[in-house]
Length: 452
Ligand SMILES: C[S@@+](CC[C@H](N)C(=O)[O-])C[C@H]1O[C@@H](n2cnc3c(N)ncnc32)[C@H](O)[C@@H]1O
Image 1 (cartoon, rainbow, N blue to C red):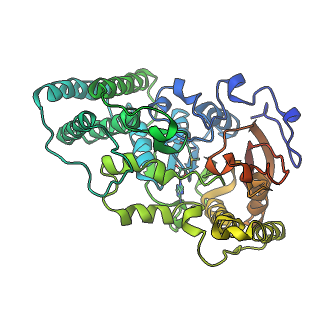
Image 2 (image 1 turned 180 degrees about the vertical axis):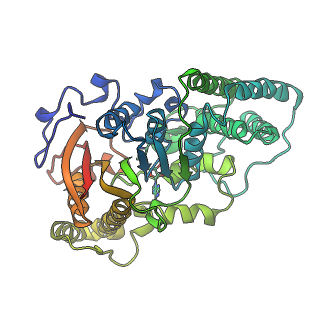
Image 3 (image 1 turned 30 degrees about the horizontal axis):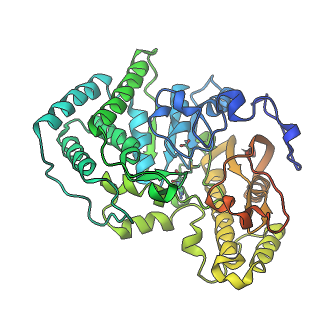
């Protein structure tokens, strides 16, 4: 971390250290997942990550007092970048992840080399090939409740996916079964009629042809074999201590029973203020892998998401801040007065989203403060935003809210500029081009410390 640039108020490209940017450093700060693609375990499942394994590794090298076994927390664990790296550093590690799909991925990764063995996964791949050869028809049906505008899979592919799910059910060992589900979930969109751009949309909508045929069995087997290879790497490495490895599939914001004062370090990247819809984008995995069974369950995950979503909060009564913050209060007022003719699609709806985002920021920082021991640090990676043409320096507000809940603010380090925006940032109105505002996008790590 020492090599990172320290920036307080003005964030300029000229301030960037040579470490910044995917191209130069092999992907430390990496929402596009390019760096993690090359790393064992991390390469299993692509995710809108916020940072790469290398970044976490740097933070651990800097802050993990190796003399003692640290306890590391990730309140927004995603597919487990922090948790896996912390484990490889010999730390105890606990993650929270609301969405059942990345929560499953994190759990299975943390089991690699312990409960989950390479040999067992390899045997399952052999059994899978035999199963496909001997079962012309699948027993199960398409998950009821899963809706898509066009058929999600073409018929021949759908049959093979259903057959794969039948096979997965037949695996006895729960960890190997979980790993096979991860393998299927990781590749299933690649042979579907949908695509990530980076949000999930139909292939024809993105100007791409439908996929009529694919060697589903081979694609899944190759993925599972790659996973087995990574597990074997861990198995062959020097014996890692049997550390704590817990993933809660629940909201960190509701974590009332946090073991107060027990964590030395938190490394996390909460959802950005870009309305990237994690739930909609993972519907295929959630439904096809049986991780949600009805629309109400999916809705509940949406409602408990950090920041909610614009779609969820835009139409309600005005959402005001639950804590005192003059600048954000003025920003919300200004937003509400923007594009009023567009109703909830204009400033009014977006002000509710921004208000709800920062109210949840206040909540998670409060819980995080309680979770850390005295002197413990939180490294929070966030991106700035431009909403309805109004720039919002999220990293500055996270530092300020951090101070409100009791943290001292040690530093804000810019990690990367000109990041890829989510859908709300790509529209000309939100980028501000129609209003003459020209603000670049960047990501920054806010380093907060619980007072001693
Ligand atoms: C930017 S991603 C984190 C990615 C992670 N750093 C990684 O490398 O995989 C933010 C994550 O927060 C999760 N999330 C959203 N609301 C949450 C909540 N209330 N509690 C826990 N996790 C939540 C999302 O599902 C998403 O996976």
